[in-house]
Image (cartoon, rainbow over all chains, first blue to last red; front, side, top):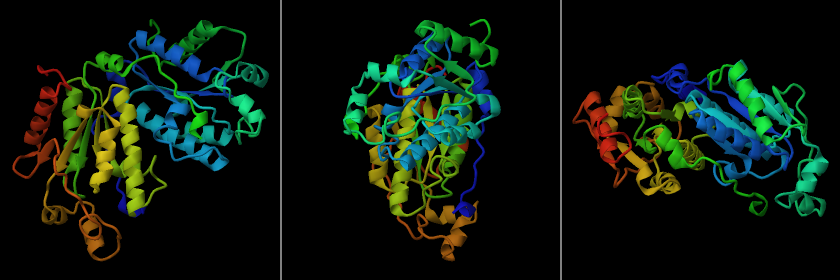
Length: 200
Length: 200
């Protein structure tokens, strides 16, 4: 197949698109158990970045499963394909100059590392939401842990499917701080990493 | 599956993202035979839009097949899935406030109409590259028509696989004008459609 598919160079470079938006694009990859606070923190950070006039996009695991990934289930192979597509999608957004915030359980180390390899070295920023299972299960915002314990949901991460913790995530979020403090922590990281202006 | 997937509202609306970028996002969907000039026109238009400080993204059929759609072939079902994913991807970009330019043969009417349905009424702008097969085949920039005629490539649009012409495309590009004139024609459409400022 690939003999007949010819790569087309586009006219505008990634650097030009980033310069236009006054930022260095990246993927902020939030990973953690269901209920660990990925979407909440990603959205709170997104709100702050938007106020700072950054150009962002939030990709959420649940929402993607209504669209791009609506054909996939929750077995291991589907989870891997789910994350592969999100990775490719994120890369396209980064190439467009966007700071991408993704909120996916993404339980497997190899899948996350595959996404990391898609982009440049400092463009993948892994944010580990290190909320203990007991707390996630107590929150149970969507009532999913209860269903998983009852056997109504198969392959549920943390209960009947593994979660492989990151070993070297760029940002580690535990329960020491509140939401605002966590937003500030990531903003500071983005400043030091050169993604957003130091004075923002 | 969907009983356990809960839609997450994001904090920033599509309208706010569009306002930030001073444009009304849309999908410019270039469709036509291989060699009809989709990628050339999309890139020339993109260059002009970038000069006007618009926020854009170019999605090219060949490039997507190296990434997001690298698992797909060229049989009818794969072509449909190819276009479905590009549609979902384009919708995400439009929701991020981006003007998306897509260059895909997209031979089937039903597939293109599926993409149209994904976004709001005036957000899908079909650009039909109405270049006759004889001219495309004479150009044969990638040497693909020759291979298709020799039987080296199966399911080649226009030769061994059908191309269903759009009946009501928003923009119809035939061979009456040159590249610059075609760029101007689309720019004027975008101004009248409110996608970019009238004075740009």
